[in-house]
Amino acid sequence: MAALRQKLSGSTLIETVVASTLFLMIFLIAVETITRVQSVLPDDTLLRAAVDLQACAREFSERPGELGISLRSYDWGEIEVTVARYPEADGFREVCFDVRIARSRQTLDYRILTFAE
Image 1: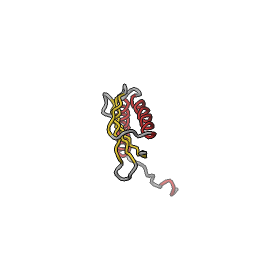
Image 2: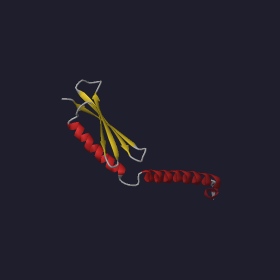
Image 3: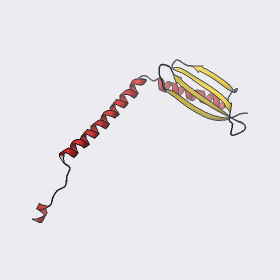
Image 4: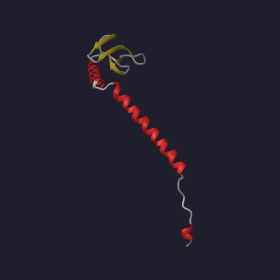
């Protein structure tokens, strides 16, 4: 009989409503963020830029080229390549790739060290 008189603990209606409201707000923010990300570049522009960046980086890692700045244009935008001496170690060059996608504020930054022969 004593077991039946035991008080059960649980959440009140107000606690349940507050928790549900917080969960719904977080869910709506996540959905809005995903929608914005997909609408910025709806096509495969970012993927094509990343593939071209990899090819460009592979080319410059094999032969870094002359010191200075060069610009490569593509149908999706451009890659600015800057080759400079690496100040912290003799015989190395720092190659910086700045990717700018046309009609977008998105940019990619990529840097590699190469051995200057």
